[in-house]
Image (cartoon, rainbow, N blue to C red; front, top):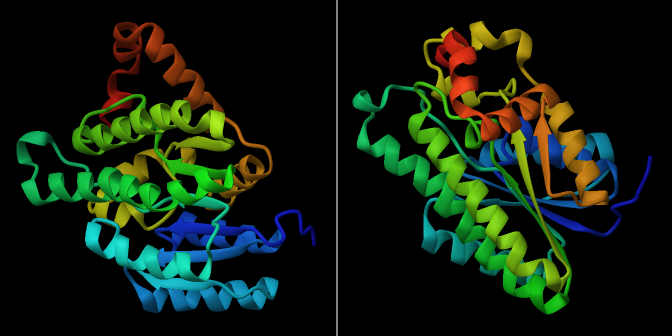
Length: 264
Protein backbone atom coordinates (compact mmCIF):
# COMPACT_ATOMS: atom_id res chain seq x y z
CA UNK A 1 0.00 0.00 0.00
CA UNK A 2 1.35 3.40 -0.95
CA UNK A 3 1.97 5.84 1.89
CA UNK A 4 2.52 8.94 -0.19
CA UNK A 5 0.31 11.04 2.11
CA UNK A 6 1.92 9.69 5.26
CA UNK A 7 1.52 12.00 8.23
CA UNK A 8 -0.79 14.46 6.49
CA UNK A 9 -3.97 15.45 8.31
CA UNK A 10 -6.97 15.75 6.00
CA UNK A 11 -10.10 17.42 7.42
CA UNK A 12 -13.28 16.28 5.67
CA UNK A 13 -16.71 17.78 6.34
CA UNK A 14 -19.86 15.82 5.54
CA UNK A 15 -17.89 12.62 6.16
CA UNK A 16 -20.63 10.39 7.60
CA UNK A 17 -21.34 8.67 4.29
CA UNK A 18 -21.23 8.87 0.51
CA UNK A 19 -18.37 10.80 -1.05
CA UNK A 20 -16.98 12.06 2.27
CA UNK A 21 -16.65 8.56 3.70
CA UNK A 22 -15.03 7.31 0.50
CA UNK A 23 -12.49 10.15 0.57
CA UNK A 24 -11.68 9.27 4.17
CA UNK A 25 -11.03 5.65 3.25
CA UNK A 26 -8.90 6.54 0.24
CA UNK A 27 -6.87 9.16 2.13
CA UNK A 28 -6.16 6.65 4.89
CA UNK A 29 -5.07 4.04 2.33
CA UNK A 30 -2.36 6.48 1.24
CA UNK A 31 -1.19 7.04 4.79
CA UNK A 32 -3.06 10.24 5.68
CA UNK A 33 -4.88 10.73 8.97
CA UNK A 34 -8.52 11.64 8.25
CA UNK A 35 -10.28 14.14 10.51
CA UNK A 36 -13.98 13.50 9.99
CA UNK A 37 -16.79 15.98 10.66
CA UNK A 38 -20.53 15.53 10.30
CA UNK A 39 -23.81 16.04 12.16
CA UNK A 40 -24.36 12.33 12.82
CA UNK A 41 -21.73 11.10 15.24
CA UNK A 42 -23.06 7.53 15.20
CA UNK A 43 -22.43 7.31 11.46
CA UNK A 44 -19.00 8.86 11.89
CA UNK A 45 -18.23 6.08 14.35
CA UNK A 46 -19.15 3.56 11.67
CA UNK A 47 -16.92 5.26 9.09
CA UNK A 48 -14.08 5.38 11.60
CA UNK A 49 -14.43 1.66 12.25
CA UNK A 50 -14.52 0.85 8.53
CA UNK A 51 -11.40 2.92 7.88
CA UNK A 52 -9.61 1.24 10.79
CA UNK A 53 -10.54 -2.25 9.59
CA UNK A 54 -9.48 -1.64 5.99
CA UNK A 55 -6.38 0.50 6.45
CA UNK A 56 -5.30 0.22 10.08
CA UNK A 57 -5.57 4.00 10.45
CA UNK A 58 -7.35 5.74 13.30
CA UNK A 59 -9.50 8.74 12.41
CA UNK A 60 -10.36 11.77 14.49
CA UNK A 61 -14.12 12.33 14.53
CA UNK A 62 -16.13 15.38 15.59
CA UNK A 63 -19.83 16.13 15.58
CA UNK A 64 -20.44 19.32 13.62
CA UNK A 65 -23.26 21.11 11.84
CA UNK A 66 -21.36 23.46 9.53
CA UNK A 67 -24.38 25.75 9.22
CA UNK A 68 -23.90 26.76 12.89
CA UNK A 69 -21.13 29.39 12.89
CA UNK A 70 -20.53 29.25 16.63
CA UNK A 71 -20.34 25.46 16.56
CA UNK A 72 -17.80 25.67 13.73
CA UNK A 73 -15.61 27.95 15.85
CA UNK A 74 -15.89 25.70 18.88
CA UNK A 75 -15.24 22.41 17.08
CA UNK A 76 -12.36 23.73 15.01
CA UNK A 77 -10.90 25.16 18.19
CA UNK A 78 -10.76 21.61 19.57
CA UNK A 79 -9.44 20.20 16.30
CA UNK A 80 -6.63 22.71 16.03
CA UNK A 81 -5.51 21.99 19.57
CA UNK A 82 -4.91 18.38 18.56
CA UNK A 83 -3.80 19.11 15.01
CA UNK A 84 -2.01 22.47 15.08
CA UNK A 85 -1.19 22.49 11.35
CA UNK A 86 -3.84 20.83 9.14
CA UNK A 87 -2.58 19.95 5.67
CA UNK A 88 -5.82 19.64 3.68
CA UNK A 89 -9.39 20.83 4.19
CA UNK A 90 -12.05 19.19 2.03
CA UNK A 91 -15.34 21.11 2.24
CA UNK A 92 -17.74 18.35 1.28
CA UNK A 93 -20.79 19.01 3.50
CA UNK A 94 -23.85 20.09 1.57
CA UNK A 95 -27.36 19.23 0.50
CA UNK A 96 -29.90 20.10 -2.15
CA UNK A 97 -33.65 20.10 -2.63
CA UNK A 98 -34.92 19.91 -6.20
CA UNK A 99 -38.14 21.87 -6.59
CA UNK A 100 -39.46 24.76 -8.64
CA UNK A 101 -38.59 28.06 -7.03
CA UNK A 102 -42.23 29.13 -6.81
CA UNK A 103 -42.78 26.16 -4.48
CA UNK A 104 -39.54 26.44 -2.51
CA UNK A 105 -39.86 26.68 1.26
CA UNK A 106 -37.77 29.49 2.71
CA UNK A 107 -36.29 27.13 5.28
CA UNK A 108 -34.84 25.04 2.45
CA UNK A 109 -33.52 28.15 0.70
CA UNK A 110 -31.80 29.40 3.85
CA UNK A 111 -30.62 25.93 4.80
CA UNK A 112 -28.88 25.35 1.49
CA UNK A 113 -27.08 28.68 1.64
CA UNK A 114 -26.16 28.24 5.32
CA UNK A 115 -24.69 24.78 4.71
CA UNK A 116 -23.40 24.84 1.15
CA UNK A 117 -21.95 28.35 1.15
CA UNK A 118 -21.62 29.96 4.57
CA UNK A 119 -20.68 26.71 6.29
CA UNK A 120 -17.98 26.10 3.71
CA UNK A 121 -16.65 29.63 4.19
CA UNK A 122 -16.74 29.31 7.98
CA UNK A 123 -14.68 26.11 7.97
CA UNK A 124 -12.22 27.64 5.53
CA UNK A 125 -11.78 30.73 7.67
CA UNK A 126 -10.88 28.58 10.67
CA UNK A 127 -7.95 26.81 9.01
CA UNK A 128 -6.73 29.54 6.66
CA UNK A 129 -4.69 31.59 9.19
CA UNK A 130 -2.71 28.51 10.18
CA UNK A 131 -2.10 27.53 6.57
CA UNK A 132 -0.92 31.06 5.82
CA UNK A 133 1.40 30.96 8.82
CA UNK A 134 2.76 27.59 7.72
CA UNK A 135 3.10 28.73 4.11
CA UNK A 136 1.40 25.67 2.66
CA UNK A 137 -1.89 23.80 2.62
CA UNK A 138 -4.68 22.76 0.30
CA UNK A 139 -8.35 23.70 0.35
CA UNK A 140 -10.66 21.55 -1.77
CA UNK A 141 -14.24 22.71 -2.21
CA UNK A 142 -16.84 20.27 -3.52
CA UNK A 143 -18.96 22.35 -5.87
CA UNK A 144 -20.99 20.84 -8.74
CA UNK A 145 -21.60 20.97 -12.45
CA UNK A 146 -24.78 22.74 -11.31
CA UNK A 147 -22.50 25.62 -10.33
CA UNK A 148 -21.66 26.04 -14.00
CA UNK A 149 -24.93 25.11 -15.70
CA UNK A 150 -28.15 25.63 -13.78
CA UNK A 151 -31.22 23.60 -14.68
CA UNK A 152 -34.92 23.60 -13.89
CA UNK A 153 -35.81 22.72 -10.28
CA UNK A 154 -32.22 23.25 -9.12
CA UNK A 155 -32.46 27.03 -9.04
CA UNK A 156 -31.49 27.48 -5.39
CA UNK A 157 -29.06 24.56 -5.23
CA UNK A 158 -27.32 25.80 -8.38
CA UNK A 159 -27.16 29.31 -6.92
CA UNK A 160 -25.31 27.98 -3.88
CA UNK A 161 -22.83 26.13 -6.07
CA UNK A 162 -22.31 29.21 -8.25
CA UNK A 163 -21.43 30.99 -5.00
CA UNK A 164 -19.01 28.23 -4.02
CA UNK A 165 -17.23 28.53 -7.36
CA UNK A 166 -17.03 32.31 -7.07
CA UNK A 167 -15.60 32.03 -3.57
CA UNK A 168 -13.16 29.29 -4.58
CA UNK A 169 -11.82 31.19 -7.58
CA UNK A 170 -11.38 34.42 -5.62
CA UNK A 171 -9.71 32.65 -2.70
CA UNK A 172 -7.27 30.95 -5.06
CA UNK A 173 -6.07 34.36 -6.21
CA UNK A 174 -5.74 35.62 -2.65
CA UNK A 175 -3.64 32.79 -1.26
CA UNK A 176 -1.84 31.32 -4.27
CA UNK A 177 1.28 33.40 -3.65
CA UNK A 178 1.42 32.09 -0.08
CA UNK A 179 1.89 28.45 -1.01
CA UNK A 180 -1.75 27.41 -0.56
CA UNK A 181 -3.56 25.49 -3.30
CA UNK A 182 -7.32 25.87 -3.83
CA UNK A 183 -9.23 23.34 -5.92
CA UNK A 184 -12.87 23.25 -7.03
CA UNK A 185 -14.44 19.85 -7.65
CA UNK A 186 -17.40 19.93 -10.05
CA UNK A 187 -19.04 16.51 -10.29
CA UNK A 188 -22.24 15.62 -12.02
CA UNK A 189 -24.72 13.43 -10.11
CA UNK A 190 -23.06 10.93 -7.75
CA UNK A 191 -24.70 7.73 -6.57
CA UNK A 192 -25.05 8.63 -2.87
CA UNK A 193 -27.78 9.35 -0.31
CA UNK A 194 -27.76 12.99 -1.49
CA UNK A 195 -30.80 12.23 -3.63
CA UNK A 196 -32.89 10.86 -0.76
CA UNK A 197 -33.46 14.54 0.12
CA UNK A 198 -32.86 16.25 -3.21
CA UNK A 199 -35.06 13.91 -5.25
CA UNK A 200 -37.56 12.30 -2.89
CA UNK A 201 -39.74 11.19 -5.82
CA UNK A 202 -36.87 9.23 -7.37
CA UNK A 203 -37.70 10.46 -10.87
CA UNK A 204 -34.45 12.35 -11.46
CA UNK A 205 -32.30 9.44 -10.29
CA UNK A 206 -34.22 7.15 -12.63
CA UNK A 207 -33.72 9.53 -15.55
CA UNK A 208 -29.96 9.93 -15.06
CA UNK A 209 -29.07 6.52 -13.62
CA UNK A 210 -26.75 5.64 -16.50
CA UNK A 211 -24.80 8.88 -16.01
CA UNK A 212 -24.33 8.57 -12.25
CA UNK A 213 -20.77 8.79 -11.00
CA UNK A 214 -19.48 6.36 -8.40
CA UNK A 215 -18.09 7.92 -5.19
CA UNK A 216 -14.91 5.90 -5.79
CA UNK A 217 -14.39 7.63 -9.15
CA UNK A 218 -14.72 11.14 -7.72
CA UNK A 219 -12.62 10.33 -4.67
CA UNK A 220 -9.82 8.93 -6.82
CA UNK A 221 -9.60 12.23 -8.72
CA UNK A 222 -9.54 14.18 -5.46
CA UNK A 223 -6.69 12.02 -4.16
CA UNK A 224 -4.77 12.76 -7.36
CA UNK A 225 -5.33 16.48 -6.76
CA UNK A 226 -4.02 16.22 -3.20
CA UNK A 227 -0.83 14.71 -4.62
CA UNK A 228 -0.64 17.24 -7.44
CA UNK A 229 -2.94 20.26 -6.96
CA UNK A 230 -5.03 21.42 -9.90
CA UNK A 231 -7.32 24.39 -10.40
CA UNK A 232 -10.48 22.34 -10.80
CA UNK A 233 -11.80 18.86 -11.45
CA UNK A 234 -14.76 18.36 -13.78
CA UNK A 235 -16.54 15.00 -13.84
CA UNK A 236 -17.62 13.33 -15.98
CA UNK A 237 -15.38 14.87 -18.62
CA UNK A 238 -18.17 15.23 -21.16
CA UNK A 239 -20.14 17.32 -18.68
CA UNK A 240 -17.09 19.48 -18.12
CA UNK A 241 -16.87 20.01 -21.87
CA UNK A 242 -20.58 20.87 -21.95
CA UNK A 243 -20.18 23.48 -19.22
CA UNK A 244 -17.33 25.11 -21.16
CA UNK A 245 -19.53 25.29 -24.23
CA UNK A 246 -22.26 26.83 -22.09
CA UNK A 247 -19.93 29.66 -21.10
CA UNK A 248 -19.24 30.36 -24.76
CA UNK A 249 -22.76 30.07 -26.17
CA UNK A 250 -25.38 29.69 -23.44
CA UNK A 251 -28.41 30.28 -25.66
CA UNK A 252 -27.39 27.54 -28.06
CA UNK A 253 -26.66 25.04 -25.29
CA UNK A 254 -29.98 25.79 -23.55
CA UNK A 255 -31.79 25.32 -26.85
CA UNK A 256 -30.02 22.06 -27.65
CA UNK A 257 -30.30 20.85 -24.07
CA UNK A 258 -34.08 21.11 -24.18
CA UNK A 259 -35.63 18.28 -22.20
CA UNK A 260 -32.25 17.21 -20.80
CA UNK A 261 -32.28 20.35 -18.62
CA UNK A 262 -35.73 19.50 -17.28
CA UNK A 263 -35.21 15.92 -16.09
CA UNK A 264 -35.87 16.75 -12.45
